[in-house]
Structure formats: structure tokens, C-alpha cells
Image 1 (cartoon, rainbow, N blue to C red):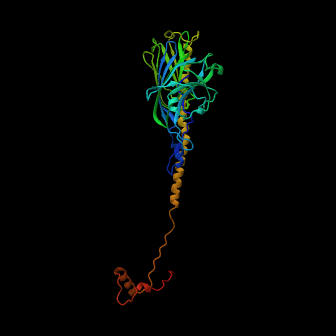
Image 2 (cartoon, rainbow, N blue to C red; image 1 turned 90 degrees about the vertical axis):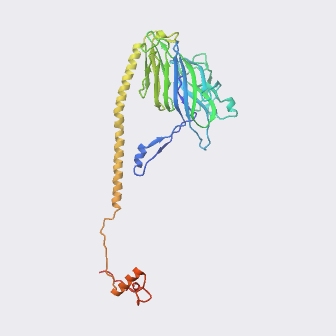
Image 3 (cartoon, helix red, strand yellow; image 1 turned 135 degrees about the vertical axis):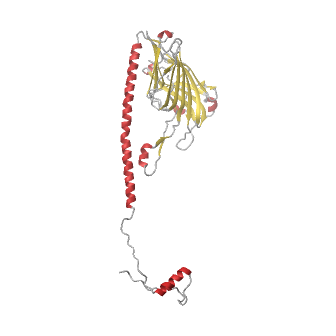
Length: 408
């Protein structure tokens, strides 16, 4: 089993929200999108790997997980109860798993082994969960080929030898099967960080040829459905391996490179891995540094591996150059569309503003009032002083104006 595929029991839902002002609302739909965080993702994954003399891999996996609050359709909180990692096993590449252990690093608690529920649909917060289920781990073979839950299990032990004499028999499944390593935790609604240490030994990973020993290790498979913010790995080689008698190649979509120390130790890191992206390491070293490798081949492989990896590297570079040309070109239509849309919207805005203004002639009429000079003087005195002119009566002269005739 290759560790690195950690999932939750429910399908992650990613919600998007769009922003924009009134003028550029249509443009905002295309360019201003920000997905919310999924229910579960890795804050970091750390691997400390030791290649044993017999070619087996002793892997320590440090997990820092982020758990968001979950609710069902009725608004009830769904606590986190179990985490698991699942991967497809190819008996042509791995012969077994042993010395499995799980530790909760937050409480420095070593988990104990237990049997899993018969189905993932049966996992629920049962009475005495804290005493009976929490802080335990299990390993099981998943029946069927559909990874999404619910699924049923065949129980395996802490030493899961993949062969004809054991319960977890991948050979009966056409040489392939799906193994799941999971651990039940104390109920928790959400957590910024939950840290675990998963330890195991992968058997039969290395093949010893006449001229070289080689293995392929896949920390993250293509079936991974979980976001990984940061992944770091250190691979320690057997005694006698150095930078001159060993080589390594790292395969991933971001073209990250592997560094090698003088003693042959390999180091690599990848940032911001998306669901569906895989990562694998191919290592080749001096076969004389190994002892009692379980998988052997009497042929030679050094030149073939060099040729294949060189070809893969050149193909990756060509693909990278092609994408460097295609990506800007693919964005040109969207940019042009946005610019045209902005021009159209601005034109409409100016047109609307121009149409809202009155552009006709303003006609102004002014006629002399049909009154005598004495009445005009009395009216002016009243409006300026508020007092009537003596001898004009009880009403102001303005009130005795005759009907104004229409202008000619």
C-alpha cells in the first residue's frame, strides 16, 4: 500500500462566490471567483523514508490535517469520527505491508489496532465511542472497485502480507486490490490542525538487476481527491550509496526536482498540489549495496532506465514549452471578450447619459404688467417694507391687478 491518499467519508463540496460592481458585473463572473476551503485538506505532509538493505521501504508519514465544520441538510453538525487513506495495490510492484502503526501527535497517544465496521455506512457516533472506538486503527481490503462510500471490507491484520496464504489476497482480484488504512478519532466538529504519524514497511518494492537496483515510490496517487498545501520528503539510502553510484527522478505536473546529498540522501518538496495530481519517485542505485532483495531479475536495467527517464524528461520539457505558448494564447479570446464588453458597456453608459440631456431651444417670455405706475410703486413698497402705502385701502394694490392679457 502506498500512503498518501487521505479522504473523508463524505464527498467534499466546493462552493464559489462571485463579486463585481454594476458596470463590470459580466466581467466579474469570468474573473472574480474564489472557491471556499473544502471540508478536509492537508496543511502539510511530511515523509521520512529509509531504504533498507533488502530494498524494503520503511516509511514514516507525518500528517497535518485541517478539518472544517460540517452540517447535514437539516443544519445538524456532523462530527469527524474517522480518517483513512486508500490506494490500489499492484502485486507486481509491492508484495506486502507490515509493522503498521498510527500515533496521534497532538496527545502523543499510540493508537491500538481494531477491526473495522463492516461498512462505511455503519460508521456513526455510537454509545461509549470514546472508550470502544476512538484512538484505534484498522487495515482492510475494500470489496469492489468503487472507492466512494459506502463499501464493505475484508479484515486484514497489522502484518498484511499480500499473497496466497493471507486474508488480504490481491492475487485473487487479478493482481490488483484496494487496501484501506483508517483510524477512529475522538469526535470533533472542526480543527485547524490535527497531527498524526503513520508508520509502515513496504515489502518487495525494490527489484535487483545484475547492474542496478531500482524502485518506484508513489507518495500521492492520481486517485487522490484531497488538496495538499505542502509536501516534503526525505529518502535515506542504504549504506554505501552516494551521489556517484545512484540517480533519482521525480515525476509530477509541476516539474519539481529532487536534490541529492553526498551520501545519496534524496530530498524533494512540492507545494499546492491539487486533487488528481500524482507524484512518484524513481530511484536507481548500486545493486552491491543491497542484501537479500526479495524481488530479483537476472537481466540488466541501467541503460534502459536512463533511456526511459531521459526520454520522459525531454518530453516533459517539450510539453512545458508547448503549454507556455498555449496558455497565454488560450487567454487571449477571454481578454478580448472582456475588453469588447467593457467598451460596449462604456458606450452604452455615455449614450444613456447623452440621451438624458435636453437639447431643444429654451423659449423665455417677459411682458410688462398691465398696471399703473402708482400701483407698481405701492406694490414695491409693500414687498420691501411690509407696510401699505397710505390711502390705498385695506388690501395691497397687487390684489387689484386686472386680468393679464395673453401675449401676442
